[in-house]
Length: 108
Ligand SMILES: [Zn+2]
Image 1: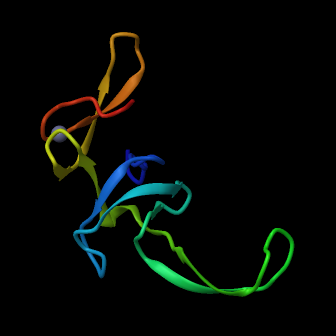
Image 2 (image 1 turned 30 degrees about the vertical axis):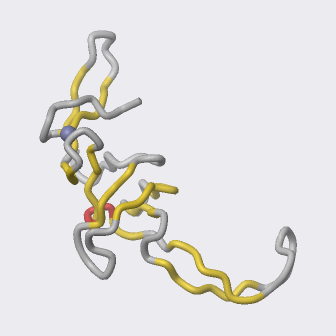
């Protein structure tokens, strides 16, 4: 299915293009509507923060900005390689994601 995000929150991914190429991190958030993901330590931007509700003090904070999901690949801990994901139907009828390289079911 085109545009469908296979990457999920909590996945470990490797960045495959751009400034952060080669960097590995954990997916903090996915944005299925825009096809983007937020990866820990990747695409850090500075942001001005005003003191307000829930914010103790103002100043410049850094945080991860979303990147396009096409710029990352799932990192398979079994292969120790970035890999594409496949899908597999389990015996109970539910769908699981698999590593296309080693065939391992990667869903927990
Ligand atoms: Zn694998």
